[in-house]
Amino acid sequence: MHLSAALENWFAPSAATATWTLDRLRGVDPVLGFALVMVVAVVLGEVLRRRFRLPRLCGHMLTGALASPLALRLLERTDLDPVKPLIDLAIGVLVFELGSRIRPRWLIDNPWLALTCVLEGVLSGAAVYLGLIAADAPPISAALAAAVAMSTSPVIVLALVHQMRPRGQVTERLLMMAAINSVLAMLALKAWGVLAATDASSLEPGIEPAITSGLLVISGSFLLGVAAGWVLTQLTKVVRGLTTAPVLQIALVIISAMLAAQWKLSPLLALLVAGMVARSRMGHSLTVEPQLGTAGATLSVMLFICLGMLFTLDGFGTLWPWVLVIIVGRLAGKGIAIALLARPSGLGWRQAAALTVALQPMSSLAVLLTADTFGWPSQLPGAHGGVLQALLISTTVLQFIGPLLAERAVRDVANECAPLPQSNKKVS
Image (tube, rainbow, N blue to C red; front, side, top):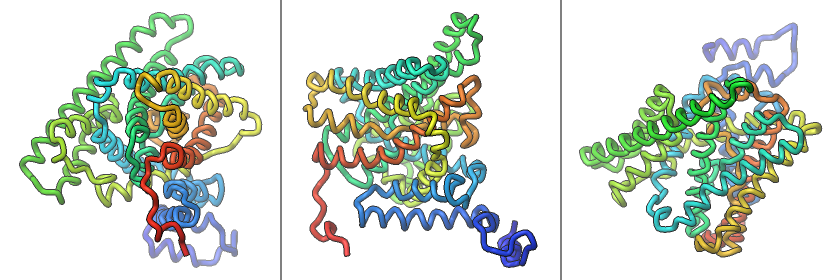
């Protein structure tokens, strides 16, 4: 619909409705409506940051939640489907940047840390699975919830790091664990998809395809990431321009993500590896701007608005036991793993507590990247509707309060943030 025609329809009298309605505002133009929501998100995020010292991304997600059918119905969730490629690009930009911050050598030098990174994801998934089984959830659906619950949102973690600029052991381990447990969740979901498509009577034959599929995804995604990192290194030598570096990096993200999707690989793993390879080969000569510049920052705001629009609390009154199991299970599993290996890996108890809390922002990233639309629950065959809804509610709660907990943990418990300048402590 052209804007002029849309405005004409907006001001034209109607027999059905003579008063102003939110549905009419949404019907003016989807692009215009989304742009208006973005303006509100940026302003609200800044207000919450200055007045209440809350993360800006909370304001972005809150705006999305208010614009969604959950509240004001300015936008419908189906309105997001056409922009999903842009949201996937926003995720890819942040994941590539996260990969460029990871130091694989650290895992080799500190094997206890490597074990912690794996164990915290596995134990949190196991705790959620066993808790849901004890709460009478169907086993196959409990396994799905456990796979998703393993991961910490890498995009939320990286957005918080951009804002707080912390430095220290907890921050570095937080970034490392968010990357690794997201990859583990992705692999678990790939295996779940194969097993869920297998009849219960033939479960044993379905294990071999699941393992084969997982190995192919790992090896193929790794090789694609290595190739992308090498190509970026060679092209950067030719261009040698700081202003064009973000353009090359964004182009690399797009190409790698599209190839991974085309070849049924993992864009998440491929982009993480690409960032690590580029950093390893280029060292400090690799300049990765936060969110890859202004365009990436814009995409990030869109991403968090969309995450807010997916918020839901429908059915909480009846599903709260499963929701509680998922939230508490994640906390317990990650806390136990970190506590068990804190001392051997060189972490103090206060730092271990801060890291456990900072890992709580939950992510549906591994599922979102493999889905064609934002209605990804409909693309999970055989999953129990109640368990899926409990998973969505848990994700809503932990995506909103998780950043608050993570910021307090890193800043106040781990003390890894520089003190605010005196002029910023008091806002008029």
